[in-house]
Length: 472
Image (cartoon, helix red, strand yellow):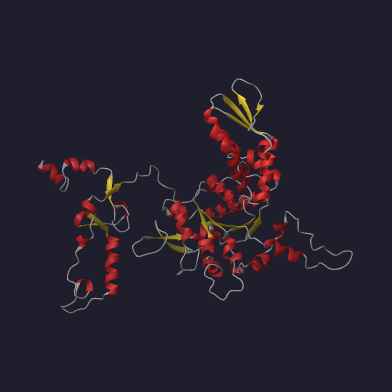
């Protein structure tokens, strides 16, 4: 028994088997021992890594510089001769252990493999399976992403360096901006971070720092810096950081954020905290180069149509060949005529727009597009409800008239495709509640009359063909 105790450094054979597969972690930064240079064991079985211990000593020496006299305290703190480290109590002396991470079976590639990026026509074909309409936007994104990763894999030894092709998406709410980016990231199998520009503020003010968008990408890449440097960052609601007009206060969430993002978009080395959203002395930092990160900004830009119409109607005059002032009031493709000058009048600074060379717009959704969104995509809403009822061995069908009635109600809400699920949830509530009660129901057909409130859904009993109109 004594030999077993000596071999295991003070542990019995049973305790060493219990600790197998576990490792110590730092009490301050929470990093496991495998990621630290060394670990210091304190009283009550506490562990602190050497980095955190050194940072603590540096803070003490900075705030309380030591003297050369005999009366200097511990690390220069006056009247202190010893620090009781046992005051940092570890509850009940519990062992400070966490499970070890499984070692990767394959080593990660040192360089980005461009061969696994599909060509633009295949990227667009994959987007077509998930996103209805927006043909021009999908084509622009496919080409821009393909050229970006060609730039990442290219060699600048010949003196020709390809610049970044960051994108700016303009489109009404619910038209598919975020869904396009999510689908694109899944297709390319690269890390994706989605940030909201409304929470960004200038450094030193309450809110998220600009570097937090890169920190989210690093977290999405499992803290792998090399993998994060080939990822995609989508900054939504970018129109919310436009310059504020007619204000005498400091614009900490508008123009200041745009100026702070200039180096981020262009490409620079950013120091971001690992595993935290804010910087402090006890959080390890990582340096991320944003030169190869693709930035996609999107926003609804409300009232931008008014600015575009004012520019287009400047030539309106009196006479036979004069343009009417209401000529563009009902133009569904008005956003396609946007220019950089229009965005500057909206409140975006020219330096910011210059770092987003690819500017394109998305079309507003029509009733026919909403009907296609209901049934055609791979993850269509109707397919989701059909799968739910299939688990109860019930078939769910929709009449064409019901689909158009649902799309018509969604158009009235003016929130894009997001309104479809809200409407379906309302009409499917009673069906999803009543179906499990009766095992004889084999099929349910949603009719136009049920959506319009003049009738009920079609109910088919098992063993019958067709469907019988319901009374509810």
